Image 1: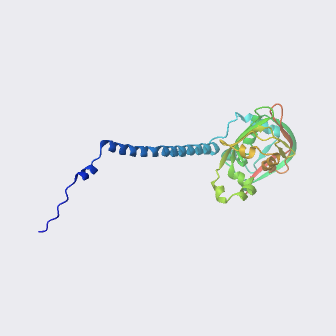
Image 2 (image 1 turned 135 degrees about the vertical axis):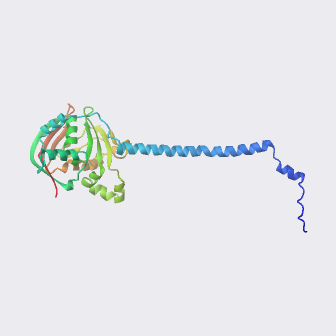
Image 3 (image 1 turned 60 degrees about the vertical axis):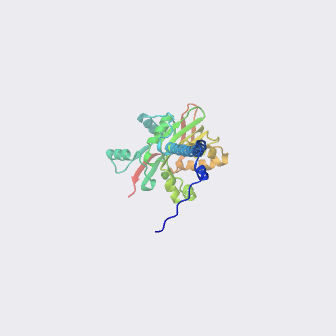
Length: 291
């Protein structure tokens, strides 16, 4: 029978190599701990930065899209709206609808945005009008007169001091893109990017008072504050010369120039901190839904 060769006997050198002193073992363990600890701070910093960035982006999104527009402290009542309508002399007609149907239509669509392409708005009875509105009356008129067709909602107009003006509102992006700026926005970005745009944006502006003369918007001084939610746009469009301001005010002019034959001869803020209007306006608006 074959026998397996016996294993060689361990020598003193083998026992010496296998033996590790307590101090050496502790040093190796501590070294490993130090290496592990050195990795942790960088991980914490990265996660902290990611959480901070996420929180900031969430805050910006909430302030721009979800939250209400900035509160300027301007409120109004039904009386303010009735007074503003009486001063302007404007009436609205819905042919084919009785009082109950008109009430149902306006109530149902007050918080909705209807596209002008689906309705016929007929402006008539143009009259020269001169009137003065308080900030509450102007705010009421802007919010309550045909809100379903407006590009804005939750509007507040304020005159915080002589020679100053402030406004806040929610802008309805898709309606503005289609009805006011189709040539500008549609030609500068792909369609897929338009679909990614939020439905609403909160805008706030404040600065030297503006005026309108002969349908031309005059903003001689840069605005002090232009914000979308919590994001300031002033670094981008606030510090601009008059020529550049004329370009973006020309797009704002489109809002009121959509009313045919409207003549704003003068719109300004007076020393009583009210809005003073003089011009030719349609005093009757007839609304029909297209077949």
